[in-house]
Length: 302
Image (cartoon, rainbow, N blue to C red; front, top):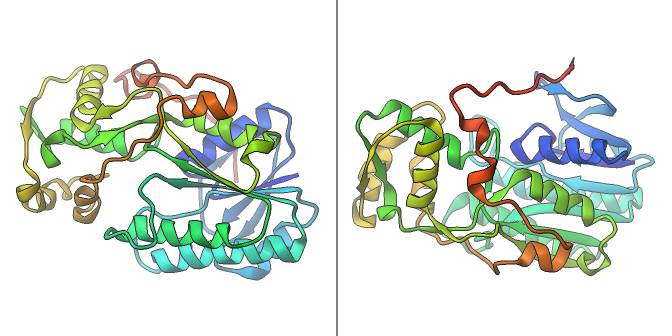
């Protein structure tokens, strides 16, 4: 049995689909109040990473925990320190209490405990907790993830839809990224179950291309069939333009836009070297952005 926390996010949905499609028994830690649809062939356990009792109960009979629960932005009672940091600490303690032999988590490139950016700082602290746990862990330190429900292409698509004629690019669009398709990241998570070279390791992962933010924006415009002229905003003016861009629905906050100044790349070929397959190139996996795209409906709603 595999317990997945955070199963409703972009990465969580892909991981659950990958595990169930491969025949694994999967249990979801389902945050109370969520109205998301649930796929077949899973069991659902209501709980919260901030509640130790629900974590311990959810781990009964579990052999592997895939910890994906985190928040990208603070809202209401959801704070970085409570969810990303303390939540990870609770998961580690529950894994120890339940004597679960394996813990797999997904972090992100640029996450450091001393980062100037709050989200990256919280993820860096969470990574340090896992590394110091003494457990048989794997931390997949991922580059920017793209796929249905991601934050990067959804944000760029929102700008192109709401701003006529032009597309402002913070930091001149020169930020270096290495986008990895969410389906490939999910495959890496599954292969961690049996790839011994990942045991007790932090594994940086990225896609097969190093792209600038402007390149990703151009691909987004092409697939959405929109024409916009790039306005390359220098970093010195990014704070001003961030306030404007953060007004739109689904937009990034000012802090998130300023954090895009940080290049997030790693070794090209890291996925093939560690897991033995070549990840998809970004242009081949953007169908979910097409104007006529119809997502396949999930059959069950919890």
